[in-house]
Every structure is written in structure tokens, then in C-alpha cells.
Amino acid sequence: MKNNELETKSELQDERLLNSTVGRRSFLQYAGASAAAIALVAAGCKKDRGYENPTMDGATLDFKTDIGVLNYAYALEQLEAAFYIKVASAPPSAFTAAQKAYFQDVQFHEIAHREFFKKALSTAAIGSLEVDFSSIDFTSASGVLAAAQSFEDLGVAAYNGAGVRITTTDYLVLAGKIVSVEARHAAWVRDQISNGTFADLNSLTALGANNSAGLDGALTPDKVLAIAGKYVKTKINVINL
Amino acid sequence: MNILNILDEIEKVDGEIYERLSPRRSAMKDFFNVGKKISMAALPLALGSMFQKAYGQTNPSTVNDVLNFALALEYLEYNYYNHALTNSTITFPTSASNAAITTIRAHERAHVDLLKSALQITGADGYVDADFDFTAGGAFGDVFSNYQTFLKVALAFEDTGVRAYKGQAPILKGNAVLTTALQIHSVEARHASHIRQMVAASLGVALKPWISYAANGNDTGISAVDAVYAGEQNTVQAGIEINGLGGASQTQAAESFDEFLTGAAVKTIANQFIKTGKKLA
Image 1 (cartoon, chains in turn orange, yellow):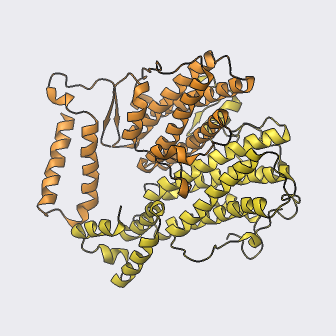
Image 2 (cartoon, rainbow over the protein chains, first blue to last red):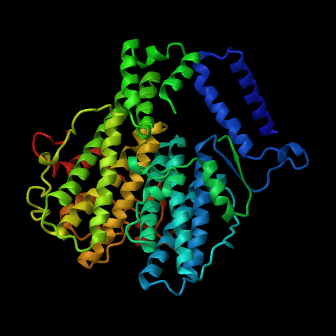
Image 3 (cartoon, rainbow over the protein chains, first blue to last red):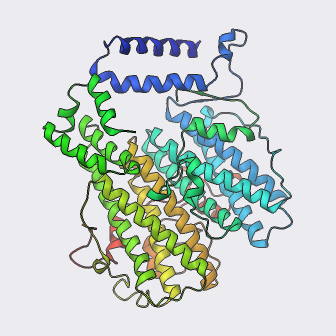
């Protein structure tokens, strides 16, 4: 199986390094292979070793190429869109007219992002994810705002952390075009909860922010997916991270 | 993280690392001395530009060019907010409005310090208040006495900042520097979102936290800043029409993607606020 082959290759490279026979210039390649080996653990390859079910179920994000990064973004946009569709269809009664209108806007922004990735990826797109919002009280204004804040702040950290993986300039620019809109959402939602917290970087340190340096969150895909996982029923497999 | 340890590790597999990084070992010692002073947050920036030079993937001067360009914009923003808070007759209508500008000033100062550190600039700031004309030759004559005028210029600066960083991203592609630049970029977008809400509240206009559709891209109604929003009306992304996609209106389609500005366009905008002799080339 693919995973086992990859792992074997990584182990071979480990051995070569230990024996100090690795070429000097291979260091960076080794570093890459090592990262892939870590990802294999994250991908839960134990299941594949059972030899009972050789095909992975769920959605697979293969970070070897930009397709994997785009599918990762597509997965997150699916999650966000599903959340806002549910909010916009039956907003909490305590929402103001302005809040209802802006949640409607944000809903269409996220749907546009989702549909953009679906079209751009075409046949390479992962399937539709099944979401689980059972932990969110959609009748509560504070509950919905808190969940929206989590999604937006996480979305910003996800794009910020994934940007460096993108090798195609056009895709990198597109990710940049989307992430600033997510940051605008995040700031607005935060101000709805508590005015003035639009860029409270101290509250975002768990997402990789650094207030003293004025830096927003940035997380690697494995960390983002671990946080987002509670809202997704579909199994997401990660390889070549 | 210890930069010296990282370099030691690399030396084990690449004995020429020091020669790659600098032709003279003594120069590397100088770097170490600076490196010890570089803040942790600036390390990715400094390392990114160093390794790019060492392994020569792309033009070595480019990353530093971007960092210097970003630094100039951060000087502009920091000095603007600092002037408003410390040397103006602006009446902030609420403590919240004053606090928001204070928060934003702190972030811009942090960005200045981060970029200076990454570029190993240890001396005084390259731009000070006296280097700027925040009235833009009189277009915003009461910028430091009229709260609304002050907000309009702040709005232009923040939305320009977002577009500026976005435009530089391709040059940083695949480099550790990119992540840090993106982390600054989204903070600027958060600022822009809040300033837009402040403008809406103070001027009593329906300005949204995100850039909405206008025929010429400028949704603010402030014609003096048309150049800041040029192209924001775009609704086609990578050849895909967003207008109508998933039910999005033209307005929502334009809102859902921010657009970038080229470095040249940003310089033209910024130079309106920079005095002769210090203008960006």
C-alpha cells in the first residue's frame, strides 16, 4: 500500500542519516521526508495495516501537491458555508436586523469560496463533507457568535499556515484574496461579541498569534484539522504533510 | 529555538553552510551577534532571507526588497496613529474609539520593530513623523483636528496595507517569510474591518466591514481615495465568474474576494503622504 511504501522509504532515509552517509545536499530533502513520516502517523495509517480494508474511506488530503492544499481549503470552506447556511436560514431571535443582514452576506461569501474551490478543483475535488454542529445552540445569539468567531479565527490561521505550501503563484494569490475577507469577518464577529476585540491577538495565541510582534494566528493543517474535527463526521485522511 | 544550534545541525550535513551564507566566517560571527538580539518572532523572517541567499533559489535581493517596502508602509501607519494620539486636537467620541486606535498603533509599532529586526536595522527609525504629510498636500487638511477626516485616511491606509501585502506574496512564495507576512496581512485586514465600522458609525453611512461592490471599486464614497480601491469591483477569480455562483449577487461576489495592488500602485498611494526627499522609489 502507498502508505507503507512511503513509510518504508522514510525509514530507509532515517537509517542513512544515522550512518552519516547522507549527502550534504540531501539535508533539506531529508527534512521533507521526515515531515512526511510525521504526517503518516497523523494520517492514522495503523488502520491500513489491518489489511482488511485496503481503501481509505472518507476524504483524503494529499499535501504532496497544491491540489491537496486546495482541497484542504475546500474542506474548511464547506464547513464554514454549512454553518452560515444554517444560521442564515433561522437566525437567533436576539439578532439585530444588521446582524441578520451581515450573516446573510457572510453566508454567500463562504458559499462563493466553497463553490469556487469546487469548480477550480473540478474532478480532483474531494466529496461533500458531512458536518456535525450538535455542539452549537443555533437559537442562542451568543452561541452562534462564539461559534462564528471560532470558525473565522481558525480559518485565518489555516490559510496563514498553509500559504507557504502553495507552489502555484495564482493559487497563492487566491488564498491571499480569501484570507483577508475571512479576517474581516473574524474582526466583525469579534466586535459583535465585545467591541474592540477585533484584533485581540493575546486571545489567539493558541492559534499561533503573537501579540508583541503584532502577528495573527498561523497553524499547520494537522493542527487545524484536529480543532475542526469535532464539526466534521466524514473521516479526513491526511498524507504527505 | 536556537539559531546557532540550527546552523550547527546543518553544518553536520553541509560543511559549506558558512561559506554559502557568507564568504567569511567572521561575517557569520557578526550575524550571530545580531542573531542573539533578533527577537524570536523575527527569526523566521531573518532565517528565510538568509537561507534564500545561501541556496540561491531566487534573486537574493527580492525578499529584502519586500521587507523594506513593508517596513516603509508600517512606518507610515505607525506615525499616523501616533501623531493622532499624541499630537493632535482630534476629539475621540468614545473611550472605545481611542482604545481601538491605540491597539492598532501598538500593532503597527510591533510590525515596524519586527521588520527592523529581520532586516537587522538596529538604529533609529528610517522614517519619522516629520517625513510625512498626512494631509496629502491639503486633500485632508483637517486630518489631525477632525475625527471623521482622521478615520477616512486611516481607512485608506488599512485597506491599502491589506492590498499591498497581498501583492507581494508571490515574491515570498515557498519562503518561511511568507507565513510571517501573511500573519501581518490578516492583522491589517482586522484593522480595516474595525476602522470601516468606525467610519460607518461616525459618518452615518452604510459602509460594510468588507469591501463591497462599486462600479469603480471604491465603496467608501471618498473619491480622494479611488486609487486605493481600483479593481475591487472584480468578480472573476482564476477565470471563474463568482457573480451568481451559489446564489451570490454581484455585490456579494465582489465582497467575497479582496484584490491585490502592485507595488508600484501602492507606492503611488503612499507617496501622496510622504514628503519630497523621502518618497518611495
